[in-house]
Length: 131
Length: 416
Image (cartoon, rainbow over all chains, first blue to last red; front, side):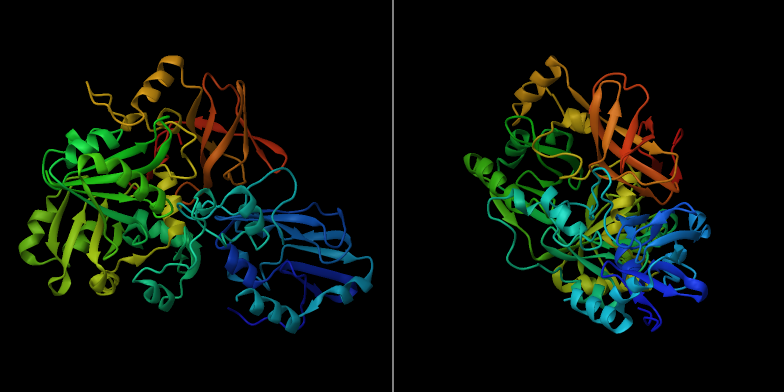
């Protein structure tokens, strides 16, 4: 399992959020999550321009084993989606914290970031989940 | 990340036999869709096993980095990295599966054949030569499927059954009860492990490991036939040309103490370790039923695409026969069909199927790696179904009704 990048914030439900310049938050699922799901075969992306709310389902990923809703860690407007996943969902398996990002949101309330887990807290969460 | 909340979708479909009951699926789904609690234990009066059982290859799987899941009370590998790569290894070359969790039951006694004529819906009289095997359903009096199994013929006083792992306890109880009047001894064989070696190159890899004197004989072994042979270091093997993938290959019964050495010899011969996840997608593509998912006691073989396994031979009074004949005479209300989804998305167990004659249900459904799209079995009302749609998370998606198998000998079947 790859290292958890220290600049990421997490939901307990295994989505990560990377805060970029100018208030854009990029979202994906953790390496732990892709490992648990197994080979991904389909990603249902949101529409660019859609309004999203923190903690609500925005995208769906399907592996050979299961379908899972992806929740947005923050509220705002979807400004970009990772079109490459339409043909190659396995990018998430290969690089969950990088090229396997799913969508990006222009955040409307930066305060929501404080609600998220930091990398250490998330590492502890998945450590406990394994037992 | 959570299982989708829109519509009714079943998430945590596990590997073969690992269908938890609906309430457990819901719970399991909350943990990333993992089949945390496998098996159909909730349906059994004795409840789930107190401890997870391990096959003799457990440490071998773990050393290979397998992702392990609880499967019908057994701690089993679901994959060793990529389920899709393992699937392709079997379609294109050779892969192996630890299937030691399956239950081997030996039957002894002079009236064993007579007993099996009564117990099984297929006709054991098709087994004439020693080593021949037969696939059959074991039914209850109502014609419901208690389990599906393979029976091997050794001699008139010795047959062998291989039954599912998740149904072990109820199968043994049923078989023992039915065997008593025939004076047949029912003996479980936990001293055996089983390794399935499957794929276009599987037989050659196995034969290369056998004692030279055995090779020509095993080379000539016909489909659905088995024979004893000596493996590496002289270990005694029971080699059957059977499988659950739609590819050629062998299923090998080996004494526990030799299983690790056999596994390692196969790996050294270039056979890829494959988990139960790949086994599930392979058997679905091959059009093979999974007990607990595609049929159970609430379903007759007519409704599960298993009519071909029913032998209504003259004068044989097998358990469930009367109910089967009555159902056929009255008209079978539901049929099992194959579905192909040409759009993006995945068909999954429990999704609603909409037809001109009413609603049906997806049984086994998955992304099919050989085809690059989703396929499924579904049970729908009998009759011309019209334009069929599946409810995928609240969206009605058109699907094609097809004859299965979907894949044979590594290639998509015509019309799939």
